[in-house]
Figure 1: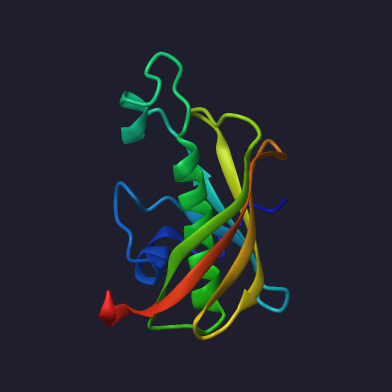
Figure 2: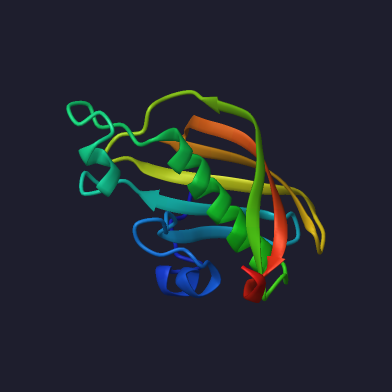
Amino acid sequence: MDNKTVIDHRKIAKILPHRYPFLLVDRVVHIDLENSEIIGLKNVTINEHFFSGHFPNVPIMPGVLVIEAMAQTGGILVHQKGYVGKIAVLLNVTSAKFRRPIYPGDVIYLHVKAIHISSKGGRMSAKALVDEKIAVEAELSFALVEKDKL
């Protein structure tokens, strides 16, 4: 896979309302609007704030934060599909499976494919891969909310 940056962290910060420590997508390395697919990237470092309390002797990235990273990647896709001025708000997580732990030093590839998007919301299939192996997968549902109504 080509790791060329398609959307950098500066542009991501303009798209998503999240900020440190909850902005969990470092860059986008692939986007295919015709097929409604996106791949984001998260570099996991030992300096992440959650490692000080999440199994300090055996640091593992919390699964809920991996789900959040996948949802944020989906939010970038929604924006790129033309839903500007709206924020994708997570409604539901189904079929979540945590297949392997994610450790400091791992690079997570966040693969998200839209199943359905409308002006009110939608659903996405998401996978987080480390070393080309699935670490987490889930289906995510979201509502689209006007930015100024949050």
